Image 1 (cartoon, rainbow, N blue to C red):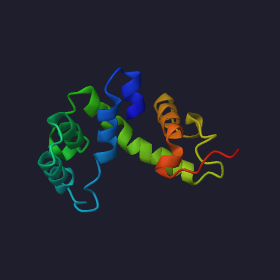
Image 2: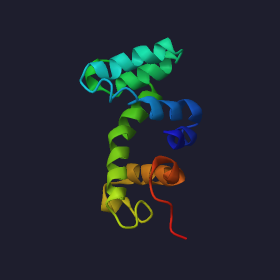
Image 3: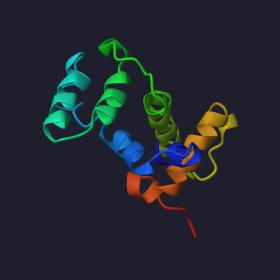
Image 4: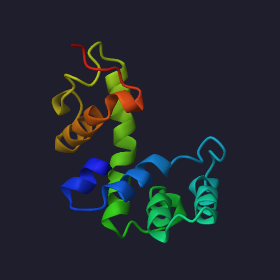
Length: 130
């Protein structure tokens, strides 16, 4: 999310927060519609903006919250695919470092791969071999 924000001239801190927080409530409330509705209530009580909460609500189609901002559309586009790319990386001997879209899908995936490489050690992907 942060990398897309930078590419699109958006606030990478806000986009990064949305990417990190959008599923924070899933273990507490895994069943729809509680996730992400109850999570949004927690975020509101903690002072998170409407912009952040609406983008997070929009990532679940059953909430009925439209993805009417660039932030909301980016979260929806990146959410499941990022998990998929991470899963692909975890089952490859070399991890994410030689993963390419032809191994998986297309340009969007290449973009997510590059973004994950930027933060690989921070998100639990093994470091690049020297």
